[in-house]
Structures are given as structure tokens and as C-alpha cells.
Amino acid sequence: MSADWETIVGLEVHAHLKTRTKMFCRCELEYGAAENTRTCPVCLAHPGALPVANGRAIEHTIKLGLALDCEIASSAVFARKNYFYPDLPKGYQISQYEAPLCGPGRLVVPTADGDEVVRIVRAHLEEDAAKTVHAGGATGRSVGADYSLVDFNRGGTPLLEIVSEPDLRSSEAALRFLRLLRQTIVELGVSDAEMEKGTMRADVNVSVRKRGEEGYRPRWELKNMNSFTFIGRGIEAAVREQIAAYERGETIEQSTYDYDPDTDKLTVHRSKEEADDYRYFPEPDLVPVEPPAELVERLRAEVPEPPGARIRRHEHSLGFDVAYALVTTERDRLYASLVDEGVPPGSSAKWVMNDFAATGQRPEDVKVHEMALVLKAGNLTRDALTLATAASASSGFSAADYTNRTAVSDASELGPAIDAVLAANPQQVETYRGGKEGVLGFLVGQVMKETQGKADAKVVNALLREKLAQDV
Image 1 (cartoon, rainbow, N blue to C red):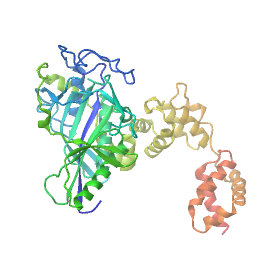
Image 2 (tube, rainbow, N blue to C red; image 1 turned 120 degrees about the vertical axis):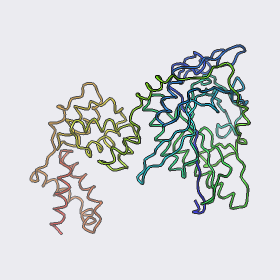
Image 3 (tube, rainbow, N blue to C red; image 1 turned 90 degrees about the horizontal axis):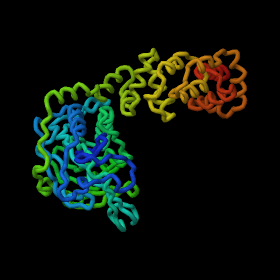
Image 4 (spheres, rainbow, N blue to C red; image 1 turned 180 degrees about the vertical axis):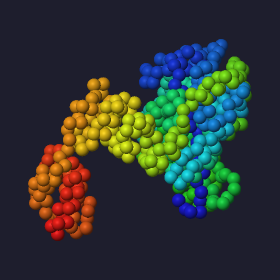
């Protein structure tokens, strides 16, 4: 991007709330259910059907609002957001606008260079639309599709929308915010927030302006993005195209776009609506929501330490990058439990982020006390640690099965294997002596292979360095 231009990004993040039933009816929610089998007269908008608000969804929204330092409204009003689309059976969506449950707030995003504060405009509760499936065409998207089908199962799902101010200044900053927001949502237990399943998605508003310029230029909204990678690439594509258009002397219209990750191209979807276009007015079939003070305080007490604070806490012993990775991959609680069992912080973080992460197992399933005994044993063979890691989440896991498998560290026992490896790899020996120390890892690996994984890799490394220096 040209240094003359500044990126402006604001986000509208939608998360399906973890409730048993829909927002305004008693249809049960089930991901993957057969099409149009979770519907009723209320969510299909039959004449005379009346909505009843889901109390658990209201509590979830307040809880998230408290975690985002939002003002909790004493009286929130549901409104009708009027627009036509095939997957909206009523011809309007029940949402909130002028009087949302959660007003202005903020999310503090830690970075290696300090904290970034992203202001939250509001967090409000609404019902999701149904799902339109676009069939045929080259991409399976609405643009160019042969036809579309509607599955009404999703229609009426409780949907929490978090709207940020346009405070983000790069695709990287947007992704940092989204990852930390997702982590916050998941830890509160209010949503699974799984982007690949569509239970979390984002509308991304992107514009550019000259550095030092006041105000905002027209923005493009990238709709329904459900991949961190594609959100980052979509922002960069929008910025690139807008700058090119301005530098050609063109004007930009405020519009909604689809982003195609396969071609890295944006396709205009429609002109971007403003609030007036939706003709908001209070929903006449629902009373205002007036959360009691005691409910708000109970929910406040249930809000855990925020992910950003834990990153800063772990940063002191691990450095920012490792602390950030631990928290945003939901593995820092396992790390902390191992440290509490006496495993050194560095060893705990290394095992959690490397050995354990590769297994794909859930951190909460690990038998922490037994695994800590393995990690504290020291001088284990690599095979023993690998096998213990693979078994660490199984019900019958016991450290005693692995801690007696110690690595060979005696120089007299390792000497013959090291000599054999050096003799068999003269080219790598000369490469090392020529100043390319990266080849040492290959030689260590060969010694480990020669000893069937029983050698202590650190001792092998030191002995190889010593041997190679002596023979020069």
C-alpha cells in the first residue's frame, strides 16, 4: 500500500448464541439438521403468530456486553428492520437499533508494541435470517448462480451482533481484534463462534483516506466473511482497489461486495443501505427488555479474566508472541496447570505449543498431574515423550509407564555412534566446517536414528560440536 494512504476498517461481528431454542419461538436448534425441519408458524411468519423473547439469549448478550466494558441499558427495545430478501419470511428482521441491550464499550487488544483500544459502538441482540443456498454457476455464490434454495432452519436463531468503531488501521489489526473477540466469546460460553460452521461471521467495512485527512470516505462492506484468512485478504483487496480507483481520478460509491478468495477479486453486490433505508420502528409485539440490577451483577460476577489480561500476565515469563499464541489457541489454561504442578514455564509452553498441539487433542482432557510428572522426569527418550504426549488425554494414562525410559547421555556410550555418523556423512561434515551450522541438526538426527532414539539429543549436540572442532 502507498505510504500516502491510510486504511480504515470497522467490523460488524455476528455470533450465534448457544441456546437450546430460537430467539422468538420454541423450535430447537440443531446444526446440520435436515433442511426445513426446525420450523414453526412463528419463525415462518404465519399470520397471527406472536414472538416471545428467549431469556437465555438476553442473559448471554448482557454477559458479553459486560466483558466488553459496555454500558448495559436499563431498557432495551426490539425493533423491526425492514427489507426484502428471500430468506426473510416476515419481510423484516427483529433486531435492535436505537436502544440496544449493550451500549458503548471497548476491547483492549494487546500487541508487542502496546495496547490497541478498539471502541465498541454497541452489542445488540437480533434473530438470524434463514440460509440461502446458491446452486450452479461457476462459484456457487449468488452472483452467477443458476438458482437458489432457502433452508429456514437457521431463521430465528439468536444472533449477537458486535459493532466496532472504524478504529482498525490494517488487516493485521482487524485480525488481532477478531481473534481476541472470538476468544472472549468462547470463554464466556455464550457461543461456539466457529467460523467454519458459520456460527461466527463478520461484515467488514473498508475505506481509505489520505494520511492526515479528517473524516471518512465512502466504504465498501464485505458481507458474511467466515474465515480469518479470507477476511485479511479481502481487506487488502478492497484497499488495493480503492486506492487504484482514487489515483485514476474515479469516485467510489458506498456499496456491498462479495469477496472471492479463489480469484482474490471483489464483486459488487448492491448499493449499501443506510439506517433510514431499513425504516426501523419499535416491534409492537414485544415489550422493552428491562434487566434487573441483581441479574446484571450476577452476570458480572460470572465474567472471567479477559484473554487480553492473561496475555499480558504470561508475557512476563514467556515473551509476547508465545503468550499470545497460548491464549488465542485456548491452551494457556493447560500451560498454567502444568506450571502449578512444578513444570518450568519454558518447558510447559514448549510442550503445550509444539508436542501437544500436534496431537489435536483437547487441552481440558489432559491428565495434568501425570503429564507433569513426565515433563519433570527429564532425560527421557524422545520416543517416550512422544508416546506419553499421545496418551496424555486418555483415561488410563500414567506417568510410571514412561518415566523409566531414560535417554543415553554417557559420552562413552554415544561415542561410537557419533563416529559412525561422521564417517558416513563426510559431505555434511565439510559443510559444517565451512561455516554452515544448520547442517548440525541433520547430524544430530542421524545419531538419534543410529541409537534408535535412545540418545539424549542435547548431549549429542554438544558432543558433535566438540568432535567436529577437534578434528579440524
